[in-house]
Image (cartoon, rainbow, N blue to C red; front, side):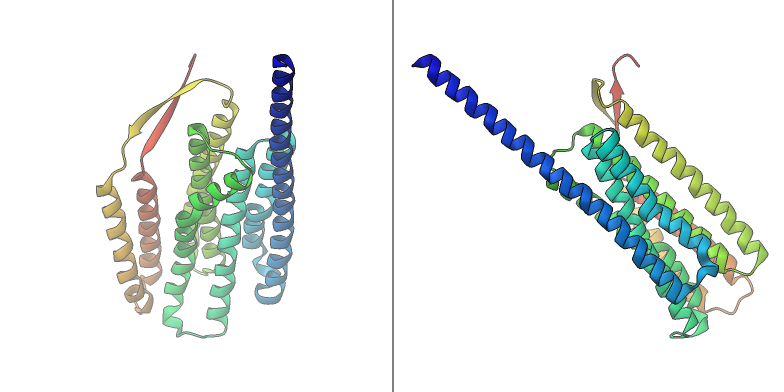
Length: 298
């Protein structure tokens, strides 16, 4: 009886594990299908908006956003996450890139329509374009962790310390790509040669930062089978957070004044204010706690 009872108990445990595994696989299949559907839907909607409202003369900016919202999610989330590595972490990275690209593009459309239809006085156009540069970054920064946690929850998985570090670098990469796309957009609509050159420099800076952040994400992912320990390199800094908040307040106070001015240096001041806003966003990220993973045999 004891052996029969133990056999039944073992069979029940095996069936329960099989049920959990089957349910997890079903969830991942639905998540992968949702990602593919979302990528296709975003591509169709963005293409329609581009054709109807912006025209194909602005295709350089459109292509950069399409890469962020469709190509990266498909390659990282589906090819790497579902097919190559069967990794929930890579799936989440794909969703984060999709989220970033989906947030930024509608602001470009709104900006063009507001300026083209002269809904506001021309003196406010500079402010609207700076808002186009900053607001998507703030939205992405505000809801990135919530999105990642929801995807992990839907996949029936719990993130570990390594996942947190990988996703932190991915979030930085997404923000930096968004900023580079915004700089490219600003360059495409600005007729002044000096301003265009400055935006090219800013674009190159953010693209370089993006490449380093994405490479860091992949390097950490490639070490997922190694043993590691967590070392806190930097505690969260409320002082840096306050400095970032003050810079943002100054931006929102000075932005309207500079945008409505008739000064010949208005474009230069707007670029400086935008750079200041970018520094504020960087400080917000820097003010968070930073943890380093120390791997064995390294």
